[in-house]
Length: 387
Image (cartoon, rainbow, N blue to C red):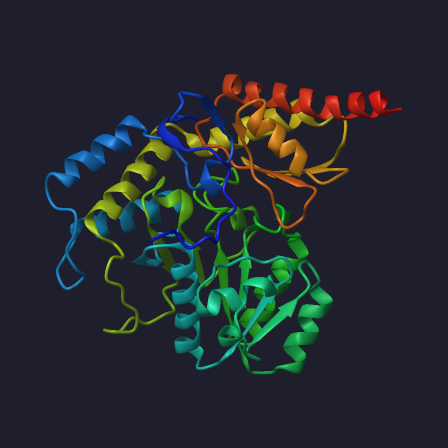
Protein backbone atom coordinates (compact mmCIF):
# COMPACT_ATOMS: atom_id res chain seq x y z
CA UNK A 1 0.00 0.00 0.00
CA UNK A 2 1.18 3.52 -0.84
CA UNK A 3 0.34 6.78 0.86
CA UNK A 4 -2.48 8.78 -0.73
CA UNK A 5 -0.48 11.41 -2.58
CA UNK A 6 -2.09 14.69 -1.50
CA UNK A 7 0.95 16.57 -0.16
CA UNK A 8 3.77 18.12 -2.23
CA UNK A 9 6.74 17.06 -0.11
CA UNK A 10 10.22 18.50 0.28
CA UNK A 11 12.84 15.76 0.07
CA UNK A 12 13.68 16.15 3.75
CA UNK A 13 13.06 13.54 6.46
CA UNK A 14 13.41 15.03 9.97
CA UNK A 15 14.30 12.41 12.57
CA UNK A 16 15.24 14.55 15.57
CA UNK A 17 14.18 17.90 17.02
CA UNK A 18 15.15 20.11 19.92
CA UNK A 19 14.17 23.69 20.68
CA UNK A 20 14.02 25.57 17.38
CA UNK A 21 16.05 23.06 15.40
CA UNK A 22 15.46 19.88 13.39
CA UNK A 23 17.92 17.27 12.09
CA UNK A 24 17.31 15.08 9.05
CA UNK A 25 18.38 11.47 8.57
CA UNK A 26 21.70 12.65 7.12
CA UNK A 27 22.51 14.75 10.17
CA UNK A 28 21.80 18.10 8.50
CA UNK A 29 20.60 20.70 11.01
CA UNK A 30 17.70 23.05 10.17
CA UNK A 31 16.35 26.15 11.90
CA UNK A 32 12.58 25.82 12.30
CA UNK A 33 11.07 29.24 11.68
CA UNK A 34 7.64 27.85 10.81
CA UNK A 35 6.78 25.45 13.61
CA UNK A 36 4.83 23.06 11.40
CA UNK A 37 2.06 25.66 10.72
CA UNK A 38 2.38 27.37 14.15
CA UNK A 39 1.97 24.11 16.05
CA UNK A 40 5.30 24.23 17.90
CA UNK A 41 4.59 26.88 20.51
CA UNK A 42 7.17 26.09 23.21
CA UNK A 43 9.92 24.53 21.08
CA UNK A 44 10.51 20.96 20.01
CA UNK A 45 10.92 18.43 22.82
CA UNK A 46 10.85 21.01 25.60
CA UNK A 47 12.21 19.02 28.59
CA UNK A 48 9.34 20.00 30.91
CA UNK A 49 6.79 18.98 28.26
CA UNK A 50 8.55 15.68 27.56
CA UNK A 51 8.77 14.78 31.24
CA UNK A 52 5.08 15.50 31.80
CA UNK A 53 4.09 13.28 28.86
CA UNK A 54 6.43 10.47 29.92
CA UNK A 55 5.10 10.48 33.46
CA UNK A 56 1.51 10.44 32.26
CA UNK A 57 2.19 7.63 29.79
CA UNK A 58 3.30 5.44 32.70
CA UNK A 59 -0.04 6.05 34.46
CA UNK A 60 -2.90 6.10 31.93
CA UNK A 61 -2.96 7.41 28.37
CA UNK A 62 -6.64 7.08 27.44
CA UNK A 63 -10.13 6.31 28.54
CA UNK A 64 -13.40 7.52 27.09
CA UNK A 65 -15.45 10.52 28.17
CA UNK A 66 -17.84 8.23 30.03
CA UNK A 67 -15.70 8.61 33.17
CA UNK A 68 -14.21 11.53 35.05
CA UNK A 69 -10.82 12.87 33.99
CA UNK A 70 -9.45 15.42 36.45
CA UNK A 71 -6.82 16.48 33.91
CA UNK A 72 -9.60 18.00 31.79
CA UNK A 73 -10.69 20.12 34.75
CA UNK A 74 -7.11 21.19 35.45
CA UNK A 75 -6.55 22.14 31.81
CA UNK A 76 -9.80 24.14 31.68
CA UNK A 77 -8.93 26.02 34.88
CA UNK A 78 -5.40 26.88 33.69
CA UNK A 79 -6.61 27.92 30.24
CA UNK A 80 -9.34 30.12 31.70
CA UNK A 81 -6.93 31.82 34.08
CA UNK A 82 -4.15 32.46 31.57
CA UNK A 83 -6.45 33.56 28.75
CA UNK A 84 -8.70 35.75 30.90
CA UNK A 85 -11.83 33.71 30.11
CA UNK A 86 -12.40 32.08 33.50
CA UNK A 87 -16.19 32.36 33.22
CA UNK A 88 -16.28 30.41 29.93
CA UNK A 89 -16.46 26.62 29.71
CA UNK A 90 -14.34 24.31 27.57
CA UNK A 91 -15.20 21.54 25.12
CA UNK A 92 -12.16 19.47 24.17
CA UNK A 93 -11.60 17.82 20.79
CA UNK A 94 -8.67 16.85 18.56
CA UNK A 95 -7.99 19.52 15.94
CA UNK A 96 -8.74 23.03 14.75
CA UNK A 97 -11.18 21.84 12.11
CA UNK A 98 -13.04 19.79 14.70
CA UNK A 99 -13.13 22.78 17.05
CA UNK A 100 -14.62 24.99 14.34
CA UNK A 101 -17.05 22.27 13.27
CA UNK A 102 -18.37 21.99 16.83
CA UNK A 103 -18.53 25.78 17.21
CA UNK A 104 -20.66 26.11 14.07
CA UNK A 105 -22.90 23.30 15.27
CA UNK A 106 -23.23 24.76 18.76
CA UNK A 107 -24.14 28.16 17.32
CA UNK A 108 -26.91 26.62 15.22
CA UNK A 109 -28.24 24.62 18.16
CA UNK A 110 -28.28 27.82 20.22
CA UNK A 111 -30.31 30.06 17.91
CA UNK A 112 -31.95 27.57 15.56
CA UNK A 113 -30.59 29.29 12.45
CA UNK A 114 -28.70 27.89 9.47
CA UNK A 115 -26.71 30.58 7.66
CA UNK A 116 -23.08 31.43 8.36
CA UNK A 117 -21.01 34.41 7.21
CA UNK A 118 -17.32 33.89 6.47
CA UNK A 119 -14.70 36.04 4.79
CA UNK A 120 -12.49 36.22 1.73
CA UNK A 121 -9.10 34.50 2.22
CA UNK A 122 -10.46 32.63 5.25
CA UNK A 123 -9.24 29.19 6.26
CA UNK A 124 -11.13 27.28 8.95
CA UNK A 125 -10.50 23.62 8.10
CA UNK A 126 -11.20 20.81 5.65
CA UNK A 127 -14.15 19.02 7.30
CA UNK A 128 -17.76 19.31 6.19
CA UNK A 129 -18.85 22.73 7.44
CA UNK A 130 -15.38 24.20 8.01
CA UNK A 131 -14.34 23.73 4.40
CA UNK A 132 -17.58 25.42 3.35
CA UNK A 133 -16.46 28.52 5.27
CA UNK A 134 -12.95 28.34 3.81
CA UNK A 135 -12.27 30.57 0.82
CA UNK A 136 -10.69 27.97 -1.45
CA UNK A 137 -13.04 26.44 -4.06
CA UNK A 138 -10.40 23.83 -4.98
CA UNK A 139 -10.88 22.00 -1.68
CA UNK A 140 -14.68 22.33 -1.46
CA UNK A 141 -16.32 19.13 -2.75
CA UNK A 142 -19.88 19.20 -4.14
CA UNK A 143 -21.14 17.53 -0.97
CA UNK A 144 -19.86 20.52 1.04
CA UNK A 145 -21.60 23.16 -1.04
CA UNK A 146 -24.62 24.90 0.47
CA UNK A 147 -26.48 28.20 0.21
CA UNK A 148 -26.19 28.42 4.00
CA UNK A 149 -22.62 29.75 3.74
CA UNK A 150 -22.22 33.37 2.64
CA UNK A 151 -18.86 34.95 1.81
CA UNK A 152 -18.16 38.59 2.65
CA UNK A 153 -15.07 40.59 1.74
CA UNK A 154 -12.61 40.72 4.64
CA UNK A 155 -12.52 44.10 6.43
CA UNK A 156 -15.53 45.38 4.43
CA UNK A 157 -18.09 46.62 6.97
CA UNK A 158 -20.45 47.98 4.31
CA UNK A 159 -20.79 44.60 2.59
CA UNK A 160 -21.25 42.86 5.92
CA UNK A 161 -24.09 45.20 6.88
CA UNK A 162 -25.72 44.56 3.51
CA UNK A 163 -25.56 40.78 3.98
CA UNK A 164 -27.21 41.06 7.40
CA UNK A 165 -29.91 43.32 5.95
CA UNK A 166 -30.63 40.84 3.14
CA UNK A 167 -30.78 37.83 5.48
CA UNK A 168 -32.69 39.20 8.45
CA UNK A 169 -33.08 36.74 11.33
CA UNK A 170 -31.35 33.97 9.32
CA UNK A 171 -27.66 34.36 10.24
CA UNK A 172 -26.66 31.76 12.80
CA UNK A 173 -22.99 32.70 13.10
CA UNK A 174 -20.16 34.84 11.84
CA UNK A 175 -16.79 33.06 11.89
CA UNK A 176 -13.58 35.05 11.61
CA UNK A 177 -9.91 34.44 12.34
CA UNK A 178 -8.15 36.57 14.94
CA UNK A 179 -5.49 37.02 12.24
CA UNK A 180 -5.86 35.35 8.86
CA UNK A 181 -2.94 32.94 8.65
CA UNK A 182 -3.23 30.95 5.43
CA UNK A 183 -4.63 34.08 3.77
CA UNK A 184 -1.29 35.85 4.28
CA UNK A 185 -1.22 37.29 7.85
CA UNK A 186 -4.15 39.61 7.17
CA UNK A 187 -4.97 41.78 10.19
CA UNK A 188 -8.45 42.78 11.32
CA UNK A 189 -9.35 46.46 11.14
CA UNK A 190 -10.64 47.64 14.50
CA UNK A 191 -13.79 49.21 13.04
CA UNK A 192 -14.54 45.99 11.15
CA UNK A 193 -14.36 43.62 14.12
CA UNK A 194 -16.39 46.07 16.22
CA UNK A 195 -19.00 46.13 13.45
CA UNK A 196 -19.09 42.32 13.42
CA UNK A 197 -19.67 42.23 17.17
CA UNK A 198 -22.37 44.91 17.00
CA UNK A 199 -24.28 43.18 14.18
CA UNK A 200 -24.06 39.82 15.94
CA UNK A 201 -25.51 41.25 19.15
CA UNK A 202 -28.32 43.03 17.28
CA UNK A 203 -29.31 39.95 15.27
CA UNK A 204 -29.00 37.09 17.80
CA UNK A 205 -26.00 35.84 15.82
CA UNK A 206 -23.10 33.93 17.37
CA UNK A 207 -19.63 35.43 16.96
CA UNK A 208 -17.01 32.70 16.52
CA UNK A 209 -13.37 33.77 16.83
CA UNK A 210 -11.09 31.23 15.19
CA UNK A 211 -7.85 31.50 17.18
CA UNK A 212 -6.50 28.14 15.99
CA UNK A 213 -3.36 29.70 14.50
CA UNK A 214 -3.36 33.16 16.07
CA UNK A 215 -4.02 32.09 19.67
CA UNK A 216 -1.90 30.78 22.54
CA UNK A 217 0.42 33.79 22.74
CA UNK A 218 1.30 33.79 19.06
CA UNK A 219 0.16 37.40 18.56
CA UNK A 220 1.80 38.88 21.64
CA UNK A 221 -1.48 38.53 23.54
CA UNK A 222 -3.04 35.24 24.57
CA UNK A 223 -5.63 35.66 21.82
CA UNK A 224 -5.21 37.97 18.84
CA UNK A 225 -8.73 39.40 19.27
CA UNK A 226 -7.73 40.70 22.71
CA UNK A 227 -6.14 43.63 20.90
CA UNK A 228 -9.74 44.85 20.63
CA UNK A 229 -12.40 45.36 23.27
CA UNK A 230 -14.64 42.49 22.20
CA UNK A 231 -16.05 39.34 23.78
CA UNK A 232 -16.68 36.53 21.29
CA UNK A 233 -19.36 33.97 22.02
CA UNK A 234 -17.14 31.07 21.01
CA UNK A 235 -13.34 30.87 20.67
CA UNK A 236 -11.68 27.95 18.90
CA UNK A 237 -8.15 26.74 19.63
CA UNK A 238 -5.75 23.99 18.53
CA UNK A 239 -2.27 24.05 16.90
CA UNK A 240 -0.03 25.60 19.58
CA UNK A 241 -2.31 24.21 22.29
CA UNK A 242 -0.49 20.86 22.39
CA UNK A 243 2.95 21.67 20.91
CA UNK A 244 2.53 18.82 18.46
CA UNK A 245 0.16 16.56 20.37
CA UNK A 246 -3.28 16.57 18.65
CA UNK A 247 -5.68 18.62 20.74
CA UNK A 248 -8.28 21.29 20.09
CA UNK A 249 -11.01 23.05 21.98
CA UNK A 250 -13.91 25.47 22.03
CA UNK A 251 -14.14 28.16 24.73
CA UNK A 252 -17.86 28.66 25.28
CA UNK A 253 -19.62 31.73 26.65
CA UNK A 254 -21.83 31.28 29.74
CA UNK A 255 -24.87 32.12 27.61
CA UNK A 256 -24.75 28.64 26.05
CA UNK A 257 -26.54 25.86 27.90
CA UNK A 258 -25.00 22.39 27.91
CA UNK A 259 -27.03 19.19 27.69
CA UNK A 260 -26.02 15.55 27.55
CA UNK A 261 -25.24 14.43 24.01
CA UNK A 262 -25.20 17.97 22.58
CA UNK A 263 -21.54 17.55 21.58
CA UNK A 264 -19.28 14.53 21.79
CA UNK A 265 -15.92 13.00 20.89
CA UNK A 266 -14.09 9.71 21.38
CA UNK A 267 -10.50 10.89 21.63
CA UNK A 268 -11.01 14.53 22.61
CA UNK A 269 -9.65 15.43 26.05
CA UNK A 270 -7.80 12.15 26.55
CA UNK A 271 -5.22 11.97 29.32
CA UNK A 272 -2.15 12.46 27.14
CA UNK A 273 -3.71 15.34 25.23
CA UNK A 274 -4.66 17.07 28.46
CA UNK A 275 -1.22 16.70 30.02
CA UNK A 276 0.33 18.08 26.82
CA UNK A 277 -2.05 21.06 27.02
CA UNK A 278 -1.29 21.62 30.71
CA UNK A 279 2.46 21.48 30.09
CA UNK A 280 2.22 24.04 27.28
CA UNK A 281 0.26 26.49 29.45
CA UNK A 282 2.69 26.10 32.34
CA UNK A 283 5.71 26.71 30.11
CA UNK A 284 4.05 29.73 28.47
CA UNK A 285 3.34 31.22 31.90
CA UNK A 286 6.57 30.27 33.68
CA UNK A 287 8.85 31.41 30.85
CA UNK A 288 6.87 34.57 29.98
CA UNK A 289 6.52 33.45 26.36
CA UNK A 290 3.71 35.85 25.47
CA UNK A 291 6.00 38.77 26.29
CA UNK A 292 8.84 37.07 24.41
CA UNK A 293 6.59 36.66 21.37
CA UNK A 294 6.11 40.41 21.07
CA UNK A 295 9.71 41.21 22.00
CA UNK A 296 11.30 38.91 19.41
CA UNK A 297 8.69 39.69 16.79
CA UNK A 298 9.48 43.39 17.10
CA UNK A 299 13.20 42.60 16.98
CA UNK A 300 12.84 40.66 13.72
CA UNK A 301 10.67 43.36 12.16
CA UNK A 302 13.14 46.11 13.05
CA UNK A 303 16.08 44.17 11.64
CA UNK A 304 14.51 43.27 8.29
CA UNK A 305 12.30 46.30 7.52
CA UNK A 306 14.84 47.94 5.19
CA UNK A 307 15.89 44.80 3.31
CA UNK A 308 15.53 44.97 -0.48
CA UNK A 309 12.37 43.54 -2.09
CA UNK A 310 10.29 43.79 1.11
CA UNK A 311 7.14 45.81 0.39
CA UNK A 312 5.39 45.36 3.71
CA UNK A 313 5.65 43.51 7.01
CA UNK A 314 2.36 42.36 8.54
CA UNK A 315 2.94 41.35 12.14
CA UNK A 316 1.47 40.71 15.53
CA UNK A 317 3.92 39.09 17.95
CA UNK A 318 5.55 36.12 16.23
CA UNK A 319 2.88 35.83 13.54
CA UNK A 320 4.69 37.54 10.69
CA UNK A 321 3.91 37.98 7.01
CA UNK A 322 6.79 39.34 4.93
CA UNK A 323 5.28 40.70 1.72
CA UNK A 324 7.81 40.76 -1.13
CA UNK A 325 7.63 42.58 -4.45
CA UNK A 326 7.56 39.18 -6.18
CA UNK A 327 6.50 35.59 -5.51
CA UNK A 328 8.28 34.19 -2.46
CA UNK A 329 8.64 30.58 -3.70
CA UNK A 330 12.26 30.92 -4.84
CA UNK A 331 13.21 32.84 -1.69
CA UNK A 332 11.62 30.15 0.45
CA UNK A 333 13.44 27.38 -1.42
CA UNK A 334 16.79 29.15 -1.09
CA UNK A 335 16.25 29.66 2.63
CA UNK A 336 15.49 25.95 2.97
CA UNK A 337 18.09 24.35 0.72
CA UNK A 338 20.94 26.86 0.94
CA UNK A 339 20.54 28.17 4.49
CA UNK A 340 18.61 25.24 5.99
CA UNK A 341 15.74 27.30 7.41
CA UNK A 342 12.06 26.31 7.35
CA UNK A 343 9.58 29.09 6.52
CA UNK A 344 6.04 29.07 5.15
CA UNK A 345 3.96 30.49 2.34
CA UNK A 346 0.37 31.72 2.05
CA UNK A 347 -2.50 32.12 -0.40
CA UNK A 348 -0.86 35.41 -1.32
CA UNK A 349 2.08 34.09 -3.34
CA UNK A 350 4.19 37.12 -2.39
CA UNK A 351 3.92 36.55 1.37
CA UNK A 352 6.57 34.63 3.28
CA UNK A 353 4.94 33.35 6.49
CA UNK A 354 7.01 33.22 9.68
CA UNK A 355 5.74 31.27 12.72
CA UNK A 356 8.65 30.27 14.99
CA UNK A 357 8.31 28.87 18.52
CA UNK A 358 7.38 31.48 21.11
CA UNK A 359 10.65 30.88 23.00
CA UNK A 360 12.85 31.70 19.99
CA UNK A 361 15.87 33.83 20.95
CA UNK A 362 17.51 36.85 19.32
CA UNK A 363 20.55 34.68 18.54
CA UNK A 364 18.44 32.11 16.72
CA UNK A 365 16.47 34.87 15.00
CA UNK A 366 19.72 36.36 13.71
CA UNK A 367 20.33 33.15 11.75
CA UNK A 368 17.11 33.79 9.86
CA UNK A 369 17.68 37.53 9.55
CA UNK A 370 21.16 37.11 8.06
CA UNK A 371 20.00 34.38 5.68
CA UNK A 372 17.05 36.46 4.49
CA UNK A 373 19.28 39.49 3.87
CA UNK A 374 21.71 37.40 1.80
CA UNK A 375 18.88 35.81 -0.16
CA UNK A 376 17.11 39.07 -0.97
CA UNK A 377 20.35 40.91 -1.80
CA UNK A 378 21.35 38.09 -4.16
CA UNK A 379 18.21 38.72 -6.24
CA UNK A 380 19.61 42.05 -7.45
CA UNK A 381 23.06 40.57 -7.95
CA UNK A 382 21.60 37.91 -10.25
CA UNK A 383 19.72 40.57 -12.22
CA UNK A 384 22.95 42.54 -12.72
CA UNK A 385 24.73 39.41 -13.93
CA UNK A 386 22.07 38.88 -16.58
CA UNK A 387 22.42 42.44 -17.93
